[in-house]
Image 1 (cartoon, helix red, strand yellow):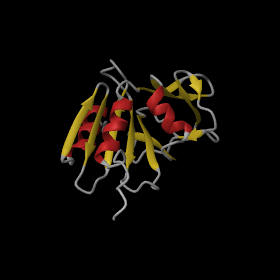
Image 2: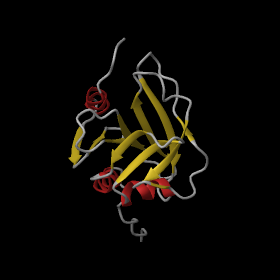
Image 3: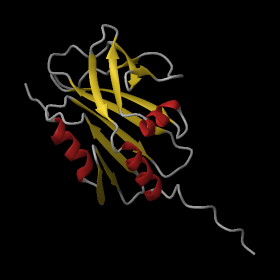
Length: 172
């Protein structure tokens, strides 16, 4: 059985970028097509079994892609319903349970992808809280990701994508 290291996967996600910056527990890369991806791991956990990635495009109307990826060596995580917690509390207005996909190979990563706009409760949680967790009905955690540095990573992506640029003055 082949196992992928979470650190290896994170490095591969960021390797193709033209720029990479680190903000505490988060790393951000932006490419020449003005797309940015931020990746956060569990804080102070060298054996982290999962990570959270955020993919943003320059189009202001494009949804923000938020993806949880979790190593599932025993094949027990996929298909179970999870709730998303911020600092141990459910995020308001998040519709329904989250289900992790089947792995592409035995013992591989299982994933759940959510789409959010920049003002959604999920996007706000990424900027305001200390951690996000996926919790099963039995209380077990699939992943606990640190958000330390996530707000700075978000602002960096805003800057790289030109979303902090003031409106142009009207032509005269």
